[in-house]
Image (cartoon, rainbow, N blue to C red):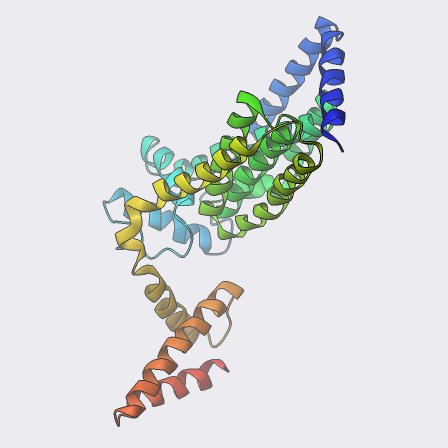
Length: 319
């Protein structure tokens, strides 16, 4: 798609919107507001049921929020194996609404509404008003997204910011330059960072958004008709600044986190007789590498106990 084609599409869209009757515009916004209201009601329905919705993870995160409410520092006093923004975004509602299971889940439900906004923007960018309603409707009735929106886990937060980032990125694709393009690029960079800082699986966003940027840069090299370099640079800078601002207050605590994660993985795996998840397996492998390095160093100094520890752990878990 050339730049001139993009401009023609934008002009056609504006012309079509200008000829829409007022009642169609009113009907569109009534439908959008109604879908958001339904989504809010679905998330609040039986939100405080007193049982764990996901085995044991939800209880662990709830106890982490309780520890934060008692003044303990994340990563320093509280073991936490995820990036920090998931708990940081849930904590305000947890404190403001009484520090209960309901208030903790409410924080997830509120953040999940950001994903509905992202679905709206994504559909609007792809297919106008009809696409916005269709995409929002699909997001509202999706049972998996609804279930995650009522559970104290990082998946809903990361998915919500991923939705919003993709919607903003597609709007930036339509308006890559000027003040609008600059604002969309900055917001895209911020939301991508927040998605990754909620759960590391959000790094998958870098692939489609990176492809959009590279394609736009290729178009510039061919047509030389527009200059979104400033917007792209601003988006990257916003991504980096957001990451720094979130992580900087936790920097001292985070420096000790990798070692604690490795130790916790070893202890947990020994107790569970070798049954482990992919994340724990990766942490275990890293911890065994550290233990093997210590064992090698001990052998060089004439000690054998670390070697026995390394061999015992490997026999125990089957590595």
